Length: 467
RNA sequence: GGCGCUGUGGCGGAAUGGUUACGCAGAGGUCUGCAAAACCUCGUAUGCCAGUUCAAUUCUGGUCGGCGCCUCCA
Image: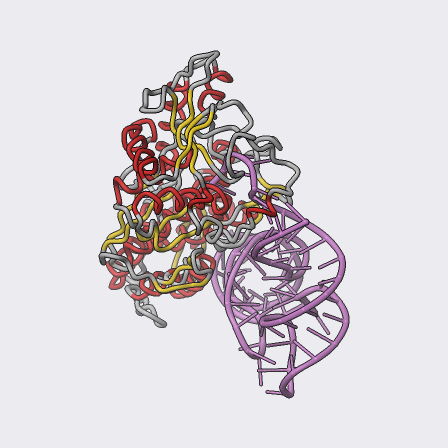
């Protein structure tokens, strides 16, 4: 497996610490609102990473956190976090908001046919671990206290700017950022925030420094270490995390343990809507329900994600989703051949069915080149559509579909048979055609089309396919 | 102001120092009762200007444009 490693800025071969195990941490959702399609792009891509590693006979151990506390709206926002803000918006408590959107997220993952991570730890369930980690940092001399919380002194971690190639001094020239004057360095970040004096938060805990809540960054370090160890193989997330969140994670983790935090860093690039980024403030979010409401399948959405390469910025258009839906139908038509083998058809001539998922995985092993994998699958589909399927190949064909599904998650092996009644209609239509009763044949064809079944008349008989 | 990415046909989107994948849409064809589907063929696609090279879309420099991050963000 070769992956682009943000640490070295090049594609490297993956050498896990303890093969065949590969430990993977993904920065997951903040559960304060519905995730938009851009969020899902990222998560589907890591789902594909895990699937690819499994197909390569690795044993990935995948942890994705649920941020349900501490993610600040902004540093200048007097300590309000997204969960508390969501609670105000919905007239609920922060706890209720977190629970609702956590359930929604997990449910949606399943609807998208994503693998379930080995752990989905919540920040609020790991307050103790976070406090301990801050205490270690305190003992190591990396922290200081100001009026609103405990902060990490980034000037004490000399490699701070290396990961993201930041020029910390130049960033001070930026006009948009309002820095807290109490902080020693502008890049310093909160480890523990005190509850505001004038009102009670829904979520707050006692700590050695006073009642409050953890800063956002510390949760990922604490939970990654708890579930995967002090040094993990792959840490992953959206590209926006590179300069701040991941930079801070490295600083606080390595300052605490003295060990390398993560050996490979992966970052997915963003998807744009036309020329705009997706953002709640622009009001252009698209959620899964919008896609379903327009009649598209979530498998088509998954296919759309796979049609672009994860390190490039890509563009979402409804036209592109339409194209993906059509492409999905092509794959499903191929899959439907399993129910209609035709005697006398010779074996698939170019390569064996067993080799196809292997080749697919081989392509993906080069830095998850999903577009190239789909190009290959489309060529395969074309060849199978030309030759069709003989009875002797059926077992191999089904195994192929199952293994393609394991790596791409497109549910091709779930394409079901048509009913006996529908088969009877097809037979009836063939009889009508033989007796030149074209009106009846066309009428029966319409009946099938209305039931979502397309008809293809070939030299060796009628082939149906899902519309 | 700093850091970084990027510019491929009508749309999406890969790859590559030497016929520009793949999907969608479009045109023509084969097949068909018709249609559809399937399959085949096609479109003079690599922002612009230089440089290196036998050869650049690919490497280098410049230029113009787009985008992201440095605020919350996948």
